[in-house]
Length: 406
Image (cartoon, rainbow, N blue to C red; front, side, top):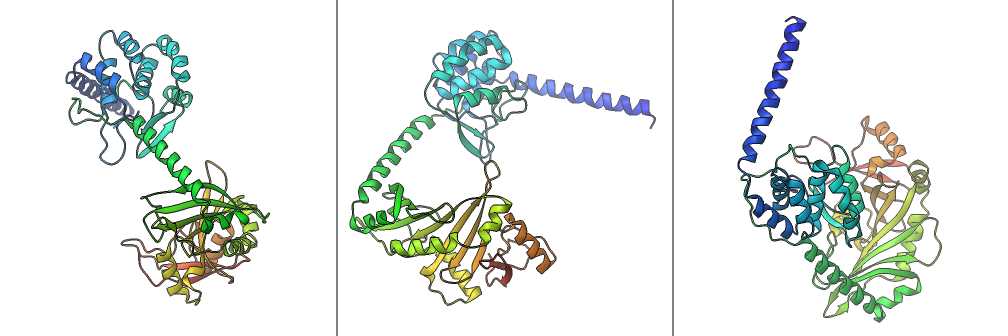
């Protein structure tokens, strides 16, 4: 085909695509709800500010449909200005986002009022729910290609352009959650007066003490009422360290099976490991976290059982320490998870293995391949041969075959 023909074909496709898009947009506009109803819905909307919905099988919420309907009506600017005065936080955000596309002067006239109100805005994008400061959300509305901006040519993602009656109030839910957490923190602090917990204050500074009542922390080997806290050693150690501790509660008595001295001993051993200096040179070690629960130096006993089955160390399960090493800084902060049988030179890496360049180099020398972050896991239909990367204190890597497929 000659160049002229190619150009003609390209232009024809472009015109057809634009025409088709215009027809689709016109078709959507013809099925929109009544504008007066849309204004009332926007004023009463208390859900997340989002476009296209969020989560699996997402659909646009009533707030998005309402503002899109108002935008494509006659006298849209005045309708949005009037609605703004009666909207909740998310409704105001929707009105502002539409006004930015419609009338910049009207948009600017409301930004100070919006930012002076208290509280962040509950928003969502893709599969992630977030809270945004009002100032940051205003900036997002004005950025090209932002997922939190209003696009007049992008209809709401709905099977039918009718309001479904969203009644969820995410701001009331957040307020109740904040009150619940405040009560849990108050109970957690009061529990420190009990002898079995107060003993930790001799060696540690206790922060974020929480009595979880009937809820529980994910990843811990037990469930039910729990007390949790972050423990920071009063003694200066080679790097920033802390213990994330969880104790079960039975009949209002906390079941504490770990001595403060055992926690300190484990922290000293891990924080002095020479491989931490390697990691610090490469990426910068932010902190080292030890996870302890009940009578054990770890949270996840199932993982420890699998590792012990493979390594056969003979170390009792409750003497295996679970360690999280945070490296780097935001937005590229990463972590390494490992399990360490205390008083040994064994550190089994179960997460973030390829964070360390030196370990990657050793792994490639051993296997001829680059590692994944989880080389011990056999994924469904995977062809890999699961094995545990085991590091000694000096950072030397060896591989131990795993005994269990996941």
